Amino acid sequence: MEEAFLHFIWKFQYFDKTELATRDHQMVNVLFPGVHNTDAGPDFKEAKIIVAGLQWNGQVELHVKASEWRQHGHHTDQAYDNVILHVVWDNDKPVQRTDGSLIPTIELKNRVDEKLILNYKHLINNPYKIPCQEQLHQVSDITWVTMLDKALAERMQQKAALVIEALEANNNDWEETAYRLLCRNMGFKINSEAFYELAKSLPYKIIRKHADSPLQVEALLFGQACLFDDDLDEPYQDELKKEYAFLKNKYSLEQNLTEAHWKLLRLRPANFPTVRLAQLSQILTNNLHLFNKFLNISDTSGAASIFKYPLTDYWKNHYQWGKVAAKSGHEIGQASIDNILINTVVPLLFAYGTYMDNNVYVDKAIALLEKIKSEKNKILDIWTNLDRKPLSAYDSQALIQLYNNYCKRRRCLSCSMGLSLVRGK
Image (tube, rainbow, N blue to C red; front, side, top):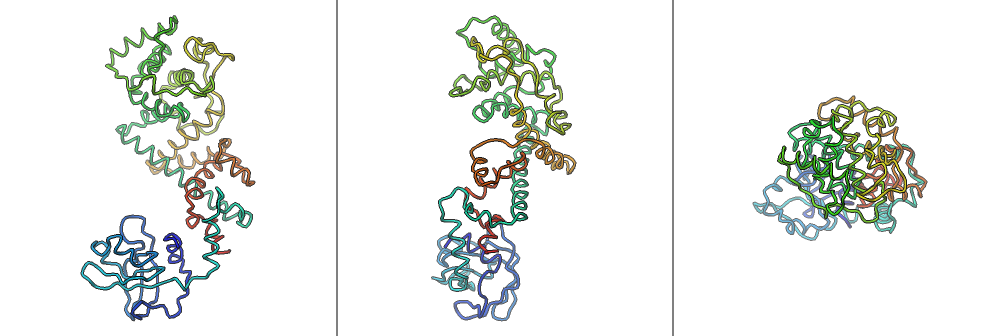
């Protein structure tokens, strides 16, 4: 027996209440099981319980074994003195408050339908990555869609919380926040933290002062990233190094990065940090007010005008200092633009709408997801193989959240689909 299942049983009252009584034979009537408490303290609050003819309003604590009350230290914790009922699977020991008074306890072990238990165990104990994959066909369309909507909302709220956290660290400067988040995104996971450290060491206000000079912006980025090759005699690099030395001194810049921070192993030429820096440089020099530009994005075609620019001549033909690319160009591709929209622009829009209490931007963020193609990754391959292929980034983001926050953690009882299957409905 797991406590999560006990919570489910209590929350939905899936047990036989006939002659429900405590260990010392006090009759119990549950008027309201309470609201699940997600903070510290007893498991349910605001419950309404009649014990021996008297109505009590307060908290309910749940344990698999009653003896866990003492194991968890509740007998010495005054925060648990207001518990009006102790609900357990196995009532193996009486429990007391800090003053020594007994807490009414009910045992549910022999009051739950065996089929309910078997349905739960079948979900939790199978070896599949998606616990309900063999029963997914039994889930109604409305239950499926409702759960995807819930998962997507959760994911957006989590991402928005990270944006607000970054905003507060940046003194409520939305432009600086957008710049830093874009920089992190340009690392495309493998080098994301290095790009973020770069952004923190090079304030956006400095970039904007030199936005009319692509050479200087590129010099600042490569210099602060510590991505010059000092062993190579390269005229263009020498020019950038000269500019960087001047600007570093002018702004008293400190380098947080070394060459060791950058990961190059098994990267395609188009994804080398040198190429991504060159792309970032063009985005920054062509968009003076980055955040305002992001606010006005409404579709993927409009986004291309913000992110897609020809690179400087050197990076059109190189992917690393001194290394000529087999294919020229290196403009940022549509898949990369979609990735930035999903992971930077949409969270910024959602966070801004939430922060400003303006649903226009929240709705805009969701609408944008519906227009973007789904990503491709191993998690989405799992869903596709189960005939649940995502049709848009809205679907893919929801499915990623569903897998990571529910399926992977076996939180079936918090999932609409898992609940319906355990209930057998």
